[in-house]
Length: 290
Image (cartoon, rainbow, N blue to C red; front, side, top):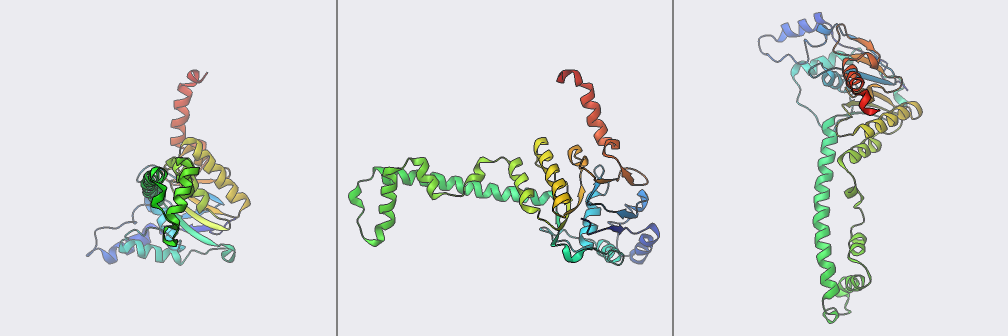
């Protein structure tokens, strides 16, 4: 499904006019003077569109421009320059979503959002660990304290129940029954990051995603690749992604814009410099795999 069919960046003349109007009071011209130098103005989208390029190539900038233009929901709102806001307002005049009634949501998701999610889980895990320690101490206290300490009054019901449970349960089962939601403790950062994407992505939605490969192992990047392909093919999702992961660059049917080229133009994933470096490295070590 395609909800955003095309997008037009500002040309050099338009940017120059914006700069001249503000020259006396501004020195930070971001996001101007990035894309005209790359001769990049018109973007045509597919169900999966990728922006590829090295650091400083403008991948994140272009995602931010697009996401603000289409009013995508965001967890974190970055501070913007006056030029950025003006740039977005100009883009809105030429941007139109199609099938808008069928699009349930439009989301921008950054790698920082994934890190925040992992940090939140780590904080939860710390609390879970503390609670586990408390429950183990509680178990042994109830198990070996004299039973006469506990009477049958209503106020002592919880103590009586804990006493009975401590006598008939192992310490592990006693803790588990009182700490039911602790499955996350078994997972690594990579597994929980993959869970983030699988829980975040729903059907009939447009997703603008910055470097989703962060915190994912090669194996989990391949799982995410399959998940994105299936979401686009079977669940009417559209993806606009910035990445330099060779696994995600190989997304089936993806249209890839190489922001390191001038002019910027679509390329096959096997033509990208980053992928060629990986290929050369493994070719040099081919005999070691045999």
